[in-house]
Length: 355
Image 1 (tube, rainbow, N blue to C red):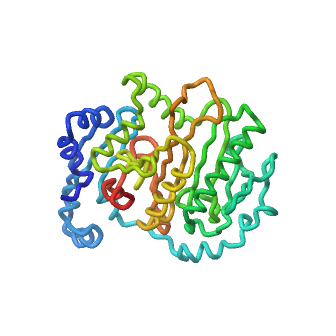
Image 2: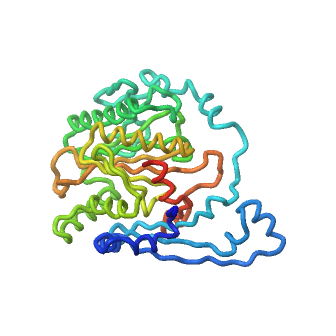
Image 3: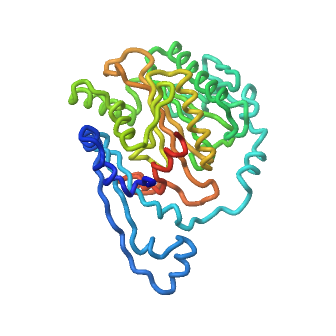
């Protein structure tokens, strides 16, 4: 029988005693049934938009909470059928084609460079960001203008070039030790420029708040559970449910508490080729699933020793779908900002597509 997030409580209860105990250490599952009465005049509209009246009259909602990080998600697949206001105008491909020739198509002459110059890869080059997040804030500008046209070799080159930028910036300023890489693809993700590009920063003092918060969870977990690794056990929880995979030593999970739709976590012991290949596989899987706009972020230990404990902390990649490019409706509202993520995609369907 096909598994789904609505069956999570039942699936959990069928686990072995050890797996069940580990699940309960990480997650709490709550279910609710939302009920409503439909006026006669709305029935045909509901049938047209949601498929069946019964699905709306009685809705199953699953709330999953990570008890260690306090990340939470509310799953209701019905929300994927909500009518959305669609922007009038040109298609994505037309918009991308018309944007060709922008400043990122001529990075050497039309973008600023960092004080230590540019790092050049085989398929990309770096620039300095004009409006900076941090003291060191650079851009990896892809040679390929179209942000959704990439292969495994290009992804590897983007990652290697960004890492080289980080090491070079650290040589320029040894006090800047905390490297962060992100990729916002197309406008739903927050990207202001269509041309394919990723961004990286190098920060002083301590890592960014959400990265440091996760490190503290990892450190506390190790202390409270006889040296056990938070990420290894997180993977084991997902594996026991059929929501995880491993390739070339890189572990992947379809996240049970996603920040938004189709979130995937990748965990690797180190920065390197196996990680690059798995990032490509996930992004290629996203494309096959119809994802056109996404966010990617990489958490990595500092470039040299610091006061906090990072010994054994892995490289963590988080990827998430940002929704329909033609929809005017934002995928983030007050619930996501201040309460818990509201999710319409089922992680069991995500793992089927990416395994």
